Length: 256
Image 1 (cartoon, rainbow, N blue to C red):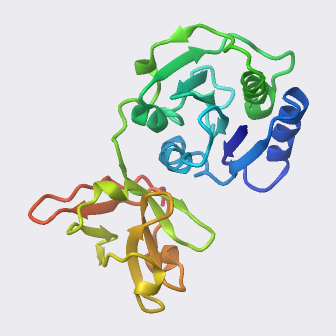
Image 2 (image 1 turned 180 degrees about the horizontal axis):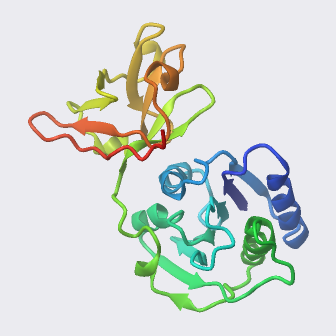
């Protein structure tokens, strides 16, 4: 299986990438995991990607492109294998969370260039052919490298920020719900949120936080939009404080 994870949004870019994959790896299923990853934000996208992988087969090839540094000589392409899954894309931290949570990890530099490489669309011209090559059973075209050199290898285990706003206005955090104690206090923008299991546990219009379907802590409003009610966006800090402990939080990285 070939799996596409990008911040391309609606438009021609995903179709161009899928055309290359279907031409160069005919017969291999191509799945759209997400085309609305946090735009130009490899860190937030990395925590979201790690949470979305559970249904993906272990031998799949994930083509990941959230690449604000495209065309820059300082941003290198990379191929990563984590517990049997392949990841192809820019070495800008996008695969770092998947890597830190894996058991077996190998990385390769990319020592191949296509005959045509546009300055701004490496997803189509470089990463898609590499992903197709791996899906056909080919080897990574480059030398193996130290996993410790991956960009983002020093990022925290959980990111205490909003990393994604979904279609319904729910604010997904980079915090795994399993890491939050039952009695912990969760707040955003100075507002402490009650904990609930699901939407119908609170009245219509009520805000709360809960463990979402991907295992992440999520801020929501029953029959409403959390992003509007709490005025939050990607990069805003989320505070988690256990009883008797200092809050664990991250400074907002949101651009106002």
